[in-house]
Amino acid sequence: MDNYGAAGGRVRKTALLILDGLGIGEAAHGSAVTRRTMPYLHSLMDAHGFAVLEASGSAVGLDDGQAGNSEVGHLTIGAGRLVPTTLNRVRAAFGNGEWQRHEAWTALRGAPRVHVAGLLSEAGVHAHWSSLMQTAELAARHRARAIFLHLFLDGVDSPAGTAPALLAQLQRGCSHLPNVHIATVSGRRWACDRSGDRATSDHCRSGLWGELERIPFDLDRLHDHILRAGSEASFPFHYIRSDGVVGNGEPIVLTHHRADRTRQLAASLAERAKLYSLVQLGEVVPDERVFFPTRPLEGGLLQVLAQHAIVATRVAERCKFPHVTHFINGLRDDVPGLAIEIPSIREDEIPHQPHMSLAKLQSCVERRLAAPEERALVVNIPNLDQVGHTGELRLAEQAAMHVDRALQVLRERAAVFGWNLVITADHGNADRMLDEQGRPVGSHSTNPVPLLVLGTSGETLRLRCNRGTLANVAATFLATAGMGVPEYMDETLIDVRTRSTALTA
Image 1 (cartoon, helix red, strand yellow):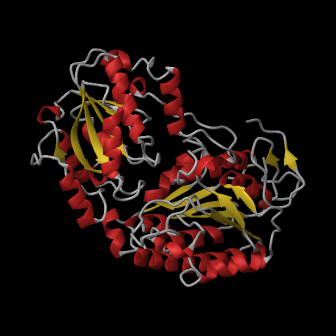
Image 2 (tube, helix red, strand yellow):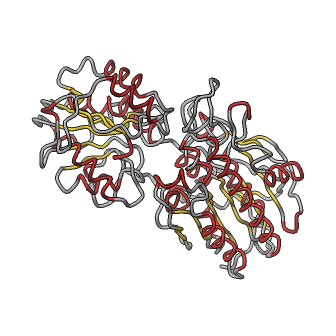
Image 3 (cartoon, helix red, strand yellow):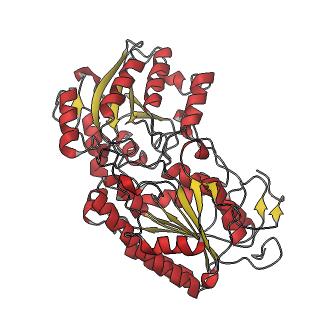
């Protein structure tokens, strides 16, 4: 099949640039996304116009008022339609009894000791406190004799300082379960690393096994740590129940909602424990011990391109690589196309290098724009999200300046080689670095994100609507490339007359 669009014309070269963590909101609350820090982006918005896309709450399948995240953002962008989230699947299955009937509980029924470990968060990004509580309740219903909770405090996706309130909420939720006990409390730093630093995950394992100093937990220690460190994310291991540490061979249920920040820890834990998981984690956890297996989507953006013989190249730093492959592919790992992973710096180096690996990423994208065989590109630029999570406005402003300069270079190179650009973001973050009291914020915002559509040689592709959601991005990309839009996708935001009905959802 040749790469021709719906009207028979050759598909126009089109690149999707995802400026991760770039929302547009009130600068009064410490935004790093301003005309001063990102003059080129704002000049494009002034000259060509832009649409405002909702990227949080019900617009992307989350609870009303809940901030968006990179997983949901890229999944929605790639699918071109609303997709049920893991949190919604978990809640529904708990409510209708499907989760309780899962065959994995058979091996845990009547177990003398079951451990439940997960992120204590209200964000729903990587986990939710209710999933911890519901897992413990189901273990109790299956007559596990003692259930020990191991809590990893958030302070990144959930706002810093919320751990004490979430801890109290969890305790109230489990108060009717006399055999459920909180055993250990620690920050997410040790449990959610995805940099490849196995020593960090092994430290978490040692903490769960009680091999670290047995520091007793109390709320004053937690409050003091938050005041000193600015977040609970690095809270050292503390112990509540001395008899609640994990023993070799004992079962652990991991309650994280997504795999990218769980795989590394799971690989460490699996050496000494029998793991169960809410989501699939590869070979580390057998499928029969996974409660909510992945449900790949059909007919997303990358699949539509492939059906027209357009093999899209994806480029991202390692920290966002799953988002331009697994997530934007609709949770599929069989979509064809070149995926280029740029090495990331360690997360603890980000405060000293807000530019991260942007120079390497930019150079790679420039080469792809110049490659005559390329027809479609998907690029994630992660700085505004990764640096935004530090909660440091000054650093986020520096990151914004680096991203803005890279955007200008890429726009200029795209024009030279005849590329259209679709520019957007997956959620907000760096746009709200301070709260109303001037305190640092390192979590995602609920602000919308922009969508710009730039034609070759500076031409403007006219927006037919200036408001939408992330679900409109896929159709807008296809229309920009001169291709038909499947009926099951949300509509394009630029003028297009041809809509295809050849594909089915």
